[in-house]
Image (tube, rainbow, N blue to C red):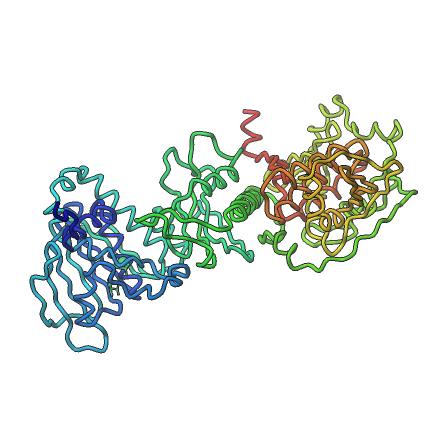
Length: 613
Ligand code: ADP
Ligand code: MG
């Protein structure tokens, strides 16, 4: 039998490749815009006719091409952006496959004019179905202009499957907007059938987002700005009340490249949890900057899916920084605290020098005669003589409160509560607060009322205090009279050994035997009854979940803080309550506990009036 295998002719191979890269007119717009950006353009004009079916024209003022590159650029795998395999892992350009122009030229009538700044004449090339029809010198401005006509003229199946004009044009708008949002510094215009739809001058990001979102949108944006070793996160989320019933205003960019990610989208939903209804989609414009070597953009031909090496870490940064930003925005109108935005825990964990932990036992410590709870903290300053220090450094001791102390937890009786509102001064500055049922603090604010969940506030205070200082200031330990013994598996033993240094910093003193863990001392903030549960929680975190060290520390500190908040705490006087409030507002995140439970609820004057109308 004779041989039957043949190499496909180039124009057919190009047509097949085109099927992957160019699915619709919008794909052409995207590829040509990206090329213009890679060429360093500062102004790009897009002119569309009949939703791109008749004409897609893109004119840029970038670097242009030499006469020979102008021919070569239409060859498959012709690219100026990747020279070695290593380049693929350090991409700083949008294109790299060298496929787009070859694909477009295979399925349309293309006309290109291009000129480099140093040349007096440029090159004019026409190409149809991968065949060069003409190539001549031309007088033209510096930069490159493409006209793509009769898209899919030789692939009728594709052409017939195009959607109605309005749908195809919507896709073009989407691509245009994504590019506009990733490059606010570039002047971009878009016209359709002779009507100019966008004329976006070079502008700052916030303004560009507002230009795309439309009039009045500037006020809807909440800034996000977070910097860690692994990722830099910038951008804006829309205030919860501006979430929409449809997806749409949801944009992720990495190194200025738009991408889609259900995983990261989940992080955003988590951050908005409790602030929006289930059936709406929070809006966001989030820009990640990561080392290009830590991402792989090569997984998808149209490159909207990207693999991240450190996606779990980025996930948690997204959740916490957005929560924090939303929290601040929520409370900002009522309280004027100067808070820092930075989410510095993972950062500080890395930069702090570890200090050998010591075990201190304060046998005489009595939580109900604490001197730690003073009102010395100002609303904006950070003082160290504070409530949480009282908790973390001295511990609460393990004594049970006397019965009269216990009464203090219910310092305002139901009856009294009924009479209080009469004297409630809405103009009052923070300072006069009320404790209800030992757990709910009501305090007036400039624009209404604030309700604070005291236990959760304590949880958050302890959490912040420990996370900010535990590496340089190991947590005070409490020696156990009767060490706790626990049978453990090999896996648990390994996990404990691996994390022993961190556990020591957190106040756990232990030894390991064959199949046993013996705990001799625990963080003094943990109440006795909770120790066993806390150890179980530690194992659940270190032995059964895949987590980064920073996340493990977070989770463990969260568990310790929760346990600490269950201790009996003296809130009997106004001063104690005020001190708690001050402490809370010194936490970077005062709206939510590490477990994402709400700490503060606000009631505006309007809402109050409404309730009585
Ligand atoms: P890729 O962008 O993946 O390199 P393309 O097929 O999109 O592949 O483009 C091929 C090459 O043509 C590019 O690498 C670039 O050198 C050149 N090129 C394309 N468009 C432009 C442009 N607008 N200005 C200057 N050079 C361009
Ligand atoms: Mg390209």
